[in-house]
Amino acid sequence: MPVKLCNDWCLPVPAASASVLEIANAVPQPPISVDEVIGCLRQRWRATYDLQLVVRRRRLYLQVMWAYLEQQSFHMDLEAYRQHLGEVLDVVNRLGLAGEVRDWLASTRDKPRLGKALSLPLQASGPEAETLIKEFLV
Image (cartoon, rainbow, N blue to C red; front, side, top):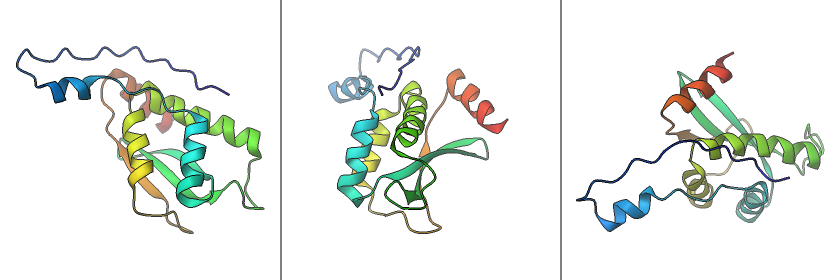
């Protein structure tokens, strides 16, 4: 199931004195897909962990939970898991944070453990981020 991308944010135009590296970093990353995340999770930890978006103190976090699809007691089947993951990644992609999430999943040294989720603070700003945070608070 492809992730719908609704990114209506305009990127700021770099100043004339900006370096080539700054301009390259301003280029948006391609959206992160469900299959890409599942592959990354299985390659890193040999398990497809649950991902959740959490708001704490008006900050948005992506958490890799300790429960995973291969557990007998996991609360979702594959289809429901893929749909849930697609919804989480849709928010990440709409905020333009696919590259940050992709890099973090590939490089974090920690591993989810029972009772301890991994947490990535999402540096979201602007009107779209405020709207999403308000939706999560309701």
